[in-house]
Image (cartoon, rainbow, N blue to C red):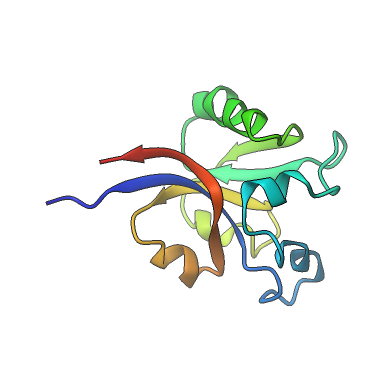
Length: 121
């Protein structure tokens, strides 16, 4: 039997990181919290990496974020080590497939409430 898989938005734990700017995620537990942050502007959008196709980055991703109140977001595709990109300062958050959330936690990331983009059973 296969486990259910979800496509989710993951953000850094926040205070775990010694990189000062990642402390901004300390109180972010939901997509609503993320959308209400004043940090995301046209000049400094929320940077999100994913392993999904360019088509996803230009259609499904932006549509989901806009529906959730995040209007200043850029997407990029990455191959390999996706979950490490926030810690490296390349992006602010990721979109990835998750079943248990273990690998998110192992990479100092957490799921955001309301951040499930797609469920696959």
